[in-house]
Amino acid sequence: MVKQARAVATRHQLVAAAAAAFDQRGFEGASLGDIIEAGTGLSKGALYFHFKSKEELADAVVQRQHEISLAAVEAIAATHAPALEQIVMLCHEMGRQIVQDPIVRAGIRLTLEFSSGGGPPDPAGPYRDWIEACRQLAETAIAEGDLPGTVDAPELARFVISAFTGVQMVSNVLDRRVDLEQRIDQMWRFLLPGIMVPARRRKCERIRHARWNRPQTST
Amino acid sequence: MVKQARAVATRHQLVAAAAAAFDQRGFEGASLGDIIEAGTGLSKGALYFHFKSKEELADAVVQRQHEISLAAVEAIAATHAPALEQIVMLCHEMGRQIVQDPIVRAGIRLTLEFSSGGGPPDPAGPYRDWIEACRQLAETAIAEGDLPGTVDAPELARFVISAFTGVQMVSNVLDRRVDLEQRIDQMWRFLLPGIMVPARRRKCERIRHARWNRPQTST
Image (cartoon, rainbow over all chains, first blue to last red; front, top):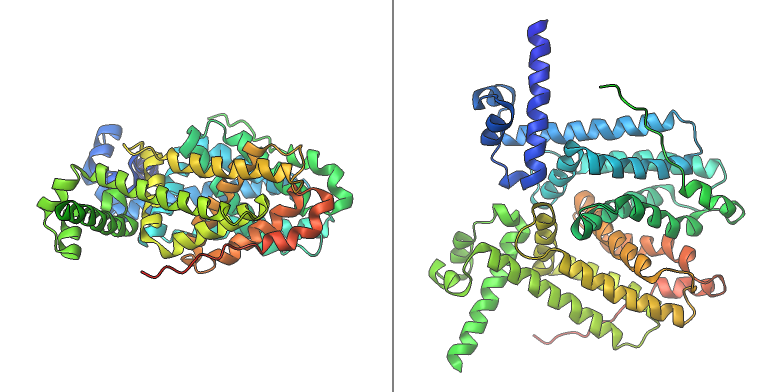
C-alpha cells in the first residue's frame, strides 16, 4: 500500500513538472525528460515507467485540468446561488485558476495547440464540459426568471465560454493577464443588460458582482 | 528590375509556403527548410538568402497577416456604412479571412504561440491594431447615436475583439470553423441589445445583418 501511495505521489509530481514545462514552452517546445530530471530529481526511467510518451503525459495534464474545472463547477453549485450568478462566479473562478495554477494554464495551452494539429488528446473535451455546465445553468436561469424563455440556452452557453476564452487569451497577449479579473467584469457589464429579462435588469449590478468565496485550503 | 521583381515574387512564395507550414504544425513543429524545398522547389539556400532564421520568417507571416487585416479595415471604411454596422462587417470579414486564407490562420496561430513563450515577433501588434480600429468605430457610433455616450469605447473595442477571438478559437476546437459565420452572428445577437441606445434597438436586426460585399478579384 505504501508502494502504491508512493507511485500515486510520483505520478502527481510528474504531471505537475510536465505542466510547468508545457505551460512555458508548449507541446513541441518542451523536452520533458530533461525538464523532469532537472526539476524533480526523478530519472527519465521513472518518467517512462509512468507515461509511455509525451502525448500520454499531455493527456494526463489535460485530464487533471479538466478535473480541477469540474470541481469548481460542483463547488459553485453547492452555494445554491441563483444560476445566473453562478455563471458569473464560474467565469471569475476559471480566470483565477488560469492565473494561479500552471496545470490549468498548461491544459489550456495544450488544448489550443492540439486543436490546430489534431493531436491525440481530444482537445474538445474540456470545452464541451464547460459549455454543458453553462448550458444547464442558463436553463435554470430561464426557470428562475432572470433570462427570458426566448434565450437559446445552448447558444448562450457556447457564446459565454467562447467570449471568456477570448478575454483570457487577449489579456495574456496584451497584459500577461494582470488585468484578467477586470476584463471578465467588463465582459459581464456589456453582456448582462442584453440577455436579462427587462424587469430583472435592476439586479444586473448584483449579478455582475457575484463571486465564489473559495474556502482556504490548509495545505 | 526583372531580377528585383523576381526576388519579390520569391519572397512572397516563401512567406506563403512558410504560412502553410506554420498553420499546420505551429512554430516549433514546422521544419521550414524541408517543407519549402518540397512545396516550392526552392532550395534551402534560397530560403536563407531571404530570411536569416525561422523567427524572421514567422515575423514576415505575422506582418503579412497584419497588412491583410488593415486592408479590410480600410475597404470597409470606404463603404461609409454606419460605424456600428462597420464593426459587424469587420468581424465577419475577419472570420472569412481565417477560414479562407492560410496566411491569416498562420499569423493568428503564431501570435497565440508567441504570446505564451514571448518569441521575437511582437504578438501584441495585430491585437492592438484591431482594437484601435474598433475603438475608432465605437467612438463614431457614439457620435452617430447608435451607442450611448456612457459606453466606454476602448473597453467595448477590447471586448469585441476578445469575444471574436474566443468565438473563432472555440469554433476551431469544436467544429473546425465550419460554423464560424453563424457563431459570429450569434455573438452580435447577444451583444447588440445590451450596448445600443434603447431608442435605436429597432435597428438591431439591420445592424446584425450588415455584411461587406468584398469585390471579386480577377486574379
